[in-house]
Image (cartoon, rainbow, N blue to C red; front, side, top):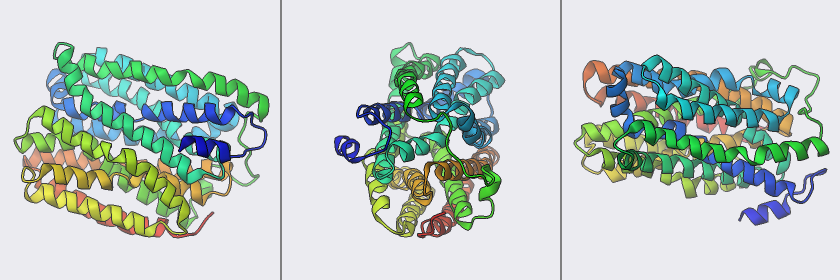
Length: 405
């Protein structure tokens, strides 16, 4: 699969080995873009107890990724124009590794939040720029290559969700060691980027070419396409980070064990492994992705209603439904790549859609945490999430129409 993509992708000015190197860097980096978040959910109860964290603050913690992605991600195109895309991604991976390594060592909530933000800030830069890398190195295979790296992303998310609790248990029932292990995994993504950086500087300019018109997010603010993508991206991010942060707790409150809750959560990520590639490839073949967006939202609504009515009645079914719905993320990334006609446009659209979208998603997890703390049940939060999923459906239908920038 990847071999065919690399062989058929022809980009001027590249050595034959460069697509392989770029694909390796994409995959290794993507694997490490979610463990910082998905490893936390299964041990959140232990982290809260050890650090003295309230449910509302825990809800804030689940919003930290969205905040970092919104605030830091918007700077990615400007940094890329100054230092080069590959250099900025390398810096992002360094920040991610440092944040993952240091946050388990602290003893207070504030320090834990700050160091989490360091790692997540690194992810924010990478999130925005990986679609640019795909457009630069694989301009004729945007959909399939987006599917490849989002599949790798889901592999990392699934592994972190499934392995963190057993890993922590094996390391002396220490959530700190369980979380810290993912810093070692993140360090593996550092290796290919210095090599790719040297090669890319030898074959192309450091900066991403951009038109003379304004190149920041403001230049996208008048585009209905960009806004539809931003709203769709923001609402799918709200759903994703609530699921990452709170789904294991929903199942634990329903009477299931921590290990079972972790496995159920892992199912939501595991489904993204095959579906990410399928959706990416399918999105690239279709003129409109509206039907795909609506279908994924329908799965999400069904999953939330199942948790609302009988959370322990069919937990595996609810996890499967929500796992399918979570594949809105690779669909959103594919649509970003497909709507831009070149790497510069994709970079600006990616920065606007992701930064604005993540900014819109910030209140969601906090509201869910606050509702849970004040009501003591999951009824209010699940009704709230069901309504948001219906709005996501409408935004996805609008974003999926064939209206390239």
